Structure formats: C-alpha cells, structure tokens
Length: 272
Image (cartoon, rainbow, N blue to C red; front, side, top):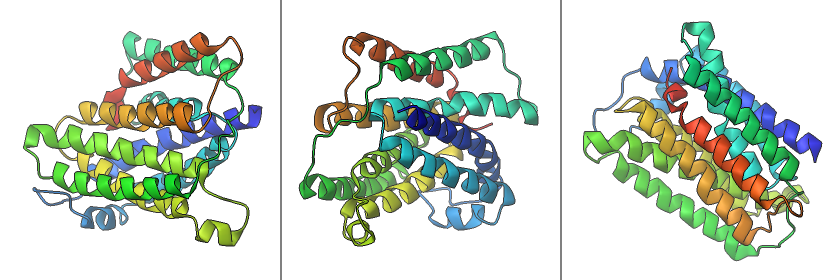
C-alpha cells in the first residue's frame, strides 16, 4: 500500500505545479463572453505554459490511476485536493506571498494526509457490474449538459457553477479509473468506464479552464475541490468497498476533513 500513497502524493505534486502554468495560460487567451467556448482548449494548447502543465497533468493522471488501484477513493481524492497546497508553495516562484494563514493550512494538509495514510486499508473488493460502468458514462453526459447550462448562467453564478461541474467531472474520472477493467487490451476497449475517463477528463479541463476566466476563481476552485472529493469518496465507501483499518474510522474522518478543509482555505491559489 505504501507505493499507492507515494503515487497519490506524486499526483498531487504534479497537478499542483501544473495548475500554476495552466492558470496563467488560461488568462492569456480570449474566449467568448457567453457560454462555454470549446475553442478555448485549442487556444490554450498554443501556449507553452499550458502544454507544460498538460505534461505534468499526464504524469499526475498516471500516478492517480495507479493509486486508485490500491487505495480507497477518499485517500486519493483528498491527496488530489492537497495539490492546492503544492500550488500555493509553487506560486512563490512567480512572486506570490504566503502569510501565516497559508503556511498553517499547508501544514494542516500534510497532517490530514498523514492521518489518512495511517488509517487507510487497501482498496475494497466489492464487485460492480456493467450497469455501474454504464451509469458513469451516462452521468458524464449529464454533467456535460449541465456544464453547458452553467456557462449560460448569470455572471455571478457562472464561475462557481462551472467549477462545481468541473469537480464532479474529475470525480467521474476517479470513479471510472477505479473500476475500469485492465485484464487485457480488449477488456479496456470494450469497457464504458475507459471512455468515461477520457470524456470526463476532457470536460473537466474545459469547464475548469472556463471557470478560471470568469468571476471568483477562489469560489470556483473551492467548489471544484468539493465536487472532486466528497461525492466520489462517498460512492467509494457505499458502493466500492472502501474502508479503513480496524479501529481507525474516526482517524480517517478527521484526516479527510482536515486535509480538504485546509485545501479549501488555499482555494485562491486555483488561479495564481
């Protein structure tokens, strides 16, 4: 299980550093004033900072998938939320300043992850059928439609709404990555969960890049963190057999709440 924890931390670091580059790139391109503009991804891909961030995201994604095969979702998703602490520290290199509150939050994130690490049990073995895999694909389509609608909401709601939908899409990536069949190439190609990973990931990037350009980025990032941590973690416990070591349930809850709450206090670093 230790290598799963290591991979989760690698994913957090990679995603955290990538956010610094992608946020700068997203703000440097023009897009439509109304709705979600799919051409935004094409434009940001012309920015070297975004491409570099995308490379870091790829590294983080591979590490995340490996971690999901050996750790409960609540541990992996809390670690990904902790990437905001990495972003905060990385932002120092481009002139950001961290006060006592931010440094305290970074410490609390580390403490929360440590508590989760000592309380986590290896992933559960509760099997899920094809219906669950198809359900994830359907949920991704619904989230795609909700994201389009969120892009057309009033200005004050647009950024947080897009952030929440982006977070839920990231949650779909985690859930699909956890259950996707990897027994053979044919199994992967015929598993709806594999396509959910790709589709939900693309939607999440589009919606979050859009949210970075509009309204309160702090609120959007906070809602993104909530979306990608809370729901997938609950589904992991209720449907996928995620559990803790005997007698460590309270420790895991405290660690999860501490890590996520501290990450939320660093939400302003979602856009540096």
